[in-house]
Amino acid sequence: MVFSFDTTYKDLDSNLYSRVTPKSIANPKILVLNDRLCADLGLDITKLNAKILAGQDRLEEPIAQAYAGHQYGSFTVLGDGRAMILGEHVHDGNRYDIQLKGSGRTPYSGRGDGNATVSSILREYLYSYAMQNLNIKTSRSLAVVETDEAVERRQTEPGATLVRVMNSHIRYGTFQYVAGQASDELRRFTDYVIDRHYPQLNEKDRTYLEFFDAVMQSSIEMVVDWLRVGFIHGVMNTDNMSIDGETFDYGPCAFMNYYDEETVFSSIDKHGRYAFGNQRPILRWNLERFAEALQPLCTQSALTYDEIEGKLDEFEDRFDAQYYTMMRRKLGINSDGEEELVDEFLEWLRKSNADYTNTFLELETPGTFADPAFATAEFERLRDKLAAVGLDEELIQEANPRYIPRNYLVEEALDEYLETGDLSKFKRLLTVLENPYTSKDMGPQFQQPPPREFDAEYTTYCNT
Image 1 (cartoon, rainbow, N blue to C red):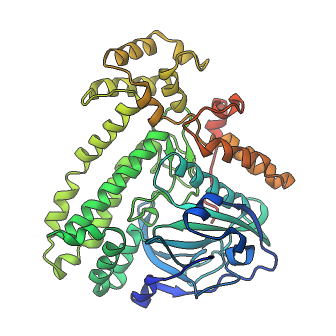
Image 2: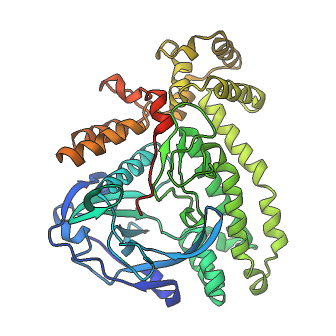
Image 3: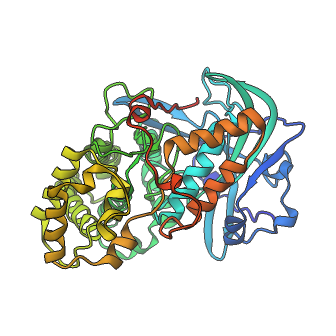
């Protein structure tokens, strides 16, 4: 089987999407194919080829979705400007969007060219692959297909298309668009989303209120997982927030090395709006915008806005509970409470500016790393306090990856392909990140943070 499409989104109001055609590509070439994802989707690899994956041979007419979003705090009406959904693939009772990214212009492209560079697409493939294996809910990348065009961004590169797989691409911003542009459709659209993502809520008395609650919870779990591994999304606009708690849109994202809550790598985040430590308050802000988008339902159903605000008022306590549970696991604390000890350890991280990933591995096995921060009396004192409450090494191993996509290694792999056409370093990184919680005999560089001056200058880009 190639794809088994049953695209229900087309049954919604036609104002919510546009029918589109992928750009013509004369000689598409598969650079990377995710065999494991093919198996998960029930796809026959022998029948997949570059023309199918690049949208040249189609089973049905693709669509580009309309949506809105607060981008860096400013509201904008948007849509898929360089992406389109080939169809909804159904396998074993599960439904997946099969989307092309970098597939050409759509009615929502504005001044954009609809294209993507090969380095940006390889980057997204690698990051989504890493996040999946870090046990974080995420979009997944099925394939990278290089095109026969030159794409101009900061430099001229070959173009590429990503085949992206998600439970759906419905986002907070989709609700903002429906509420503002087709409010009469909001109840029907909300029912559709609940049926697709939260069907268990149809048994509840307060379905719409429970829907908001479920979206808030799935989003909290997602962001707490980001904080667990040091991930910085970089562009937490409401149009990049999945209604299903899936991490997606790996544009100016990166991983924090040295602990600093103000860490920002994105070239467009001039004021640190989406810094590592701001991801929590920004999630709350985004949920407030999502709540506002649901407000028209209050006149169409028994839902009241006071009830939604009541759920929002629970955000801080619920985030705290999820966060401290996560941090206790990272620190190997196999009991409830101990928030003060967690806070004390976080304060040490702030002062020491130690490598975030390696700090927790050093707790498990002292002497693993030569960082002077781990040889201090204060670090030893904290380790003794953790041991006194029962330092559980199994918890540490489960919560803390041995490997993350070190930013400088990612750049080296991408540069190697651009300069020589060789994917060896890229594939080696994929091998390391296939099981990031398991130590590998592949050299110490994969656990080595970069020189501090590299992080100080490192910049990521959106590529649009």
